[in-house]
Amino acid sequence: MVKKTETSPDPSWGYFDWLRVAEEGLRPLAKLMKTGKADLPIIGKTSSHGPQADRLESFSRPCLWAAHWLQATPTTFPATAPQSLSRKTIADWFRQALLLGTDPSSPEYWGPTEDHHQHTVEMAALVLALEIAREFLWDPLSQTEKEQVARWFASVRGTKLHPNNHLFFGVLTLSFLEKEGFGQKTDAPQISQWLDTLETMAIGKGWFRDGSNQTVDYYNAYAFHYYGLWWGRLFGQNDSTRTKRWQNFTREFLPDYAHFFATSGENVPFGRSLTYRFNAVAPFALAEMCGALSVPPGLARRISSKNLHFFWSQPIFQSQGLLSLGWIDEFLPLSERYSCGGSPYWAAKGLAPLLLPPSSPFWQDSEQPLPSEISDFSHPLPTAELVVRSIEGEIELLNAGTAISTSNTVFGSYKWGKLSYRTGVGFDVQLPDGPYPIDSSLTALMEDGSLHGRQQTRSLAVGKDHLACSYPLGDSVEIETHLWWNGPWQLHLHRYKIGKKCRLLLGGQSLSAKEMENLKEKFSFPNLSWNNSTHHVALQSLQGFAKAGSRRTIVGKQPRTQIYAGNSVTLFLETDLLFGEGWLAALHAVAPTTTTLGRWELGGTQTGRWSLKNKKGELWTVRHPSLPAI
Image (cartoon, rainbow, N blue to C red; front, side):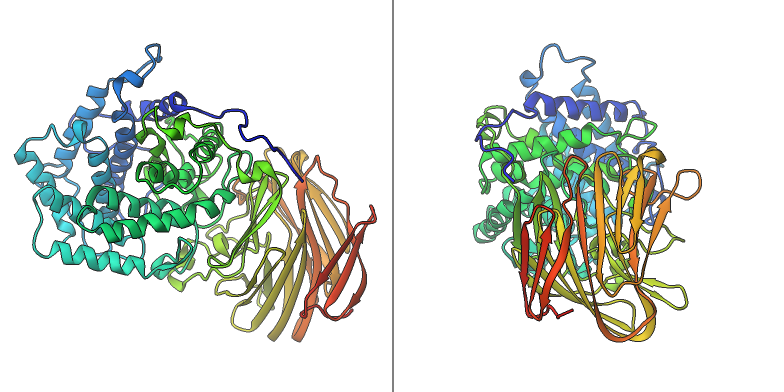
């Protein structure tokens, strides 16, 4: 279904809008800045890293935000800008706090970094801040003061880093020390070793598996490509081959990545650290600055601006007016144990467009529509084992192969393990003492009451109209899943081999609402449907299911589980107790309420070929050797 065909859609936010957002975000932080302090008293949950790390995080990430604002040329600020902050005041406080935090004799001292320590992460954030706003934050320091900061940075030497994107934090910090004259003989070999290891995580087409995490998600954009480009620009002058290699990684990545954004600007929620929100667009402007942009500048600008506008227009702020932990509002259960009140300010990476002057083609070229604004599409990414689809301007992500390592399940395997994710509707999370979320998933309910979702997955097929994967559910259930699609509809075929009796549940898309009366459900097995004010969902059993059920969360009765709102509902199909081998089939659809879901009915079936027909008389024929005869 074609949305738009024009090459220059209505313009989105421009340079001064971004400046306004940067200052609006900085203003409540400035109110918390106290003389003699090296942290900001940000309200929020504490992390698993301890109070010193949280103190540092409350400083380093807002400092990166401020750096983007500080480095803008003064004359580019509108003369009529309301309540404009003092650039001198902001810069002075961050410099003074930096000196207090790195002074071992000060009660404000952050302490050194250690093995696998969060301080190393925040050191890299400060390296970038000092480089971005060098004339405000680094150059004014005396030589003695620079030596003090360098000694604190130098505590990264000899420490062990997590074997994933965290290696970049050591790379950036040691590279900065080397550049500023504080290097040692061992630094260059260590930097090369870390970069070599990071490059082993490349799987092709600009995609990376995040080391020991074994996952593919937005860390590709705001970690691997972001840090790789920064390293090349700041420190890669003596290694042009590696610099070009990282630029080429990004050139390969961005054309595919442009498909992850809905017409609303929202990127499909998927994976961990979603509370960083609009840092998802971090690599677009940075690629332009580094000469590695492989999509038109007008498209890069539109993606970035629409994404920032989407989030900045939502109630994403906590009681102090600062960025909250959550997605479209404050929702702490979405965050990971490593998150604290200052964590959302990694969104500062998303302010990268402010690094480009207003004269840049990024700002001056005519905007081009997003892929989701042009037409529906199905875009397979075999290397990443994903299929990204646009349906009426919304984005659906189908995941065939992301494996969640045992060490990573603590972050919530459901953040990768659902069969599909969508913009506009969100998903359910698992609370610490709550059941595994069943939405958009096949799960196994054991006789002891335990519920198992997908974790270790092997991709079998990733195509334009078909996805297949195999995975265990617990230790006694083997599943082979096949999905086909047609517009908003998915056809599910699940083959099972069960060694311990259980029931299989197929959950449909979770829907949420602020008011419970906006959530309605209607089901008469085998046909289920439910809706809120914006979307409706259909789930229909074709084979193997015995009954249906509903999982509801009501404000005031149960804790919130949905990333969009407090009230939510998910309907599901359920089998009888199963043992041995067999198969299940169902239809599932999600669409805006403005779209009629013309149901499909299964007609003729034979091995390798199924035919479906809707009320309009349209035919949908699926051919695949895995299809059994009914």
